Length: 138
Image (cartoon, one colour):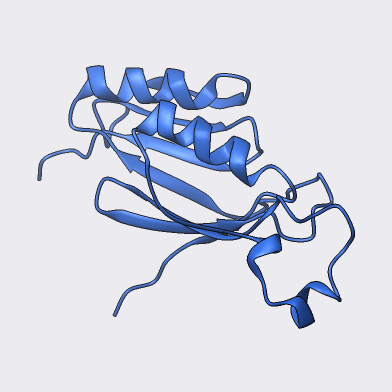
């Protein structure tokens, strides 16, 4: 069984996809725009949303994420959830932390902790929470 995170960027999905391609090396696997829906479905859509993303999927490493522009409100809310990036070493953690925090907010600077050689928390420019960690060897 697989569970995939589904993210609603509320009108900024394409911007988010391009950001994650640059920051994480994400690979787009599918994009469907509202204009691609059958005519009967388009009748209920908000005018001007044809180019917005109805559904997309992309991979970061082996993880598949799904997302959309949702209701295009412009205000994504990712409250109570964070994604975790398992870095291969502290240098990788630093690189990814810097890339993800560009335009975002650092919540806990990347530092050595009792449970990891490098751990930090941030909200990216879309408000999505991230934890970057180098898993400690047991």
